[in-house]
Image 1 (spheres, one colour):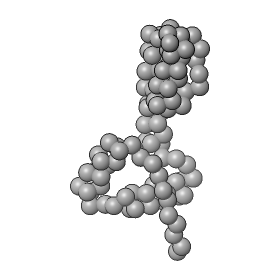
Image 2 (tube, one colour):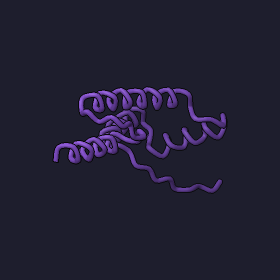
Image 3 (cartoon, one colour):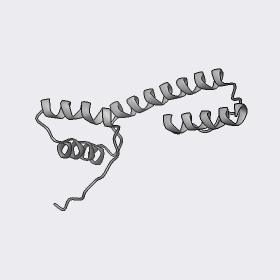
Image 4 (cartoon, one colour):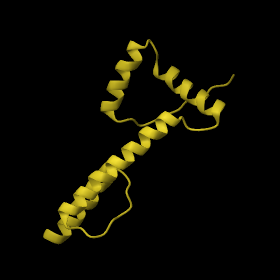
Length: 99
């Protein structure tokens, strides 16, 4: 069966923690990614456990964003993207308002 290479960006802290899990499970990153791909191919969907984690992370990101907005005095609500984007939006807005 032909194979292909997959490149991905992963948070450095998450990768270090995952490296430990994989090592203790005697698995490699390739095996983990292959298992994920095989599961999605077989079920034709994103694994439910991962989807729930993604939703929880999105809710937490939105909660932090709402707190930042409420304490910063920024009235507009830009599209939520990433924590880094949120921080940049707040910095830009604060700089414009306060110099």
